[in-house]
Picture (cartoon, rainbow, N blue to C red):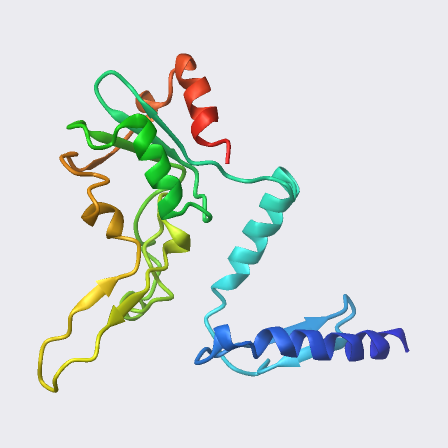
Length: 209
């Protein structure tokens, strides 16, 4: 009896999540069962889909257990004698405004190399389907990015047949506005580029927000 009540309680909230506008155009399959196999909820459960998100569920569950619900990754930026160092743990909340504020403090406009140490390997896993790579749902994995790696573009109305002029609302704008003017290309840093102890105060100041 209780399983029928639970199934009825799950139907509306899960349907609302799986039919959200953010999933428009996506094919979603889900099934929720009890340990004895009683089906509590299902949607497209008979479709053959690539179960890529199963690993994500396990990874997120482990991170929540190990780090706790209040954990927030912090991108740390500091200046060394011969370079600017960035420690990128994969902060999805990093914004253009945050980067501009940090640039003003450590003088990104100086001619100096930037060393970036990312928390995990950058690139595309070898097991990903090649046909998926051009799509927006399969970007390269990286730990240093702005606005959850989303960039808006605006195309103004022009005469038919004329080339469109694309205006970036943010994202690459930091380069256009001179944030990295004169700075040499990014370099992937190894463990030797970890911040020294005397840089801790600067790191805390930059990441206080």
